[in-house]
Image (tube, rainbow over all chains, first blue to last red; front, side, top):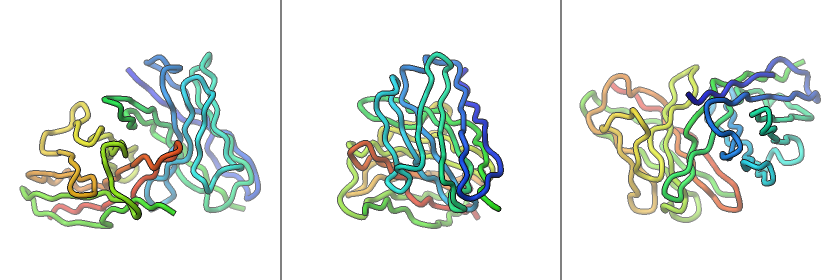
Amino acid sequence: EVQLVESGGGLVQPGGSLRLSCAASGFTFSNHWMSWVRQAPGKGLEWVANIRGDGNEEYYVESLKGRFTISRDNAKTSLYLQMNSLRAEDTAVYFCARWGYYNSNYFFDYWGQGTLVTVSS
Amino acid sequence: QTVVTQEPSFSVSPGGTITLTCGLSSGSVSTNSHPSWYQQTPGQAPRTLIYSTNIRSSGVPDRFSGSILGNKAALTITGAQADDESDYYCILYIGSGIWLFGGGTKLTVL
């Protein structure tokens, strides 16, 4: 059974840093692109970043480039999101998601339950 | 700056049919946009409904269907039920490794 379990969320002061983790199990982790998606309170979903299965290709939403870094450890089957210079507007639930692939199309096929990050003094 | 557009809200009667759309502020949606649809209820993770334009995810009732209508991706619910009341999101591939979600549609069944 595919499982994605996020951790590392919490309360952090503006300007601070936080590292989120996503523990993956039930599938060959290195075979899949992975992603972080966030959702601010009462708002919609926002794609944050993608990372290729071997970790050698990354993409980010333009607004977060330079502050957030996605990474992975395939030996530990874990995905990470390093978040620096945090702002109040980064307050959100952060979801880890797996990319599936079918008929030349990519899509999210599994989601974690999310971890809440609150940026506040 | 490209924006993915969705209707902010929609209302449907039980048993009714409704079509939600997912468009691009500049350009047309095609299968190359990798359109997929997700359902989310408050406090829950999203659930995958439709991928590759029109393929239902495992366990999704056949009252949900996906298509391309004109220059947009579309999600149609035929015979809406009370528990279809949720938020619905689409995501599209914009290019150069970038993906964008639409703003979501809040569906009310009443």
